[in-house]
Length: 106
Image (cartoon, rainbow, N blue to C red; front, side, top):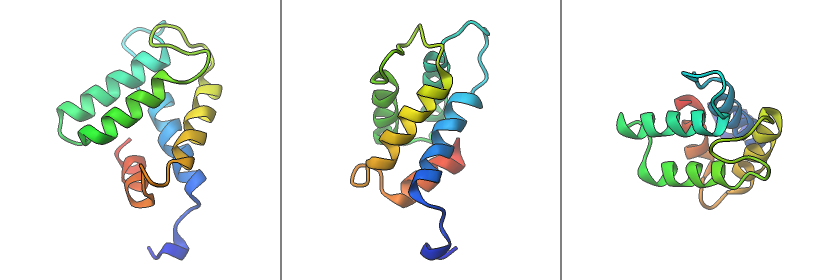
């Protein structure tokens, strides 16, 4: 895929956020999506599929979404929107190639 064929950064960021929040299997349906997503990140780090730097970055983003914390967050759509916005704007911390790899990983 050439750079001109790549999807826009905002679409890739949305895919990372959506997959992290909606495709994370929660053991308990009452579990917060933030806690569930954090568990997924922990799992990927333990498997060596996620770098420590990306783990810290994504974990920090999960903790900074307004109205959501590790135990309480009922607004999955808003969580995805906030994560998408943050990921899309982090050009220096998360270059396009790394963002695309995260989308594949999730």
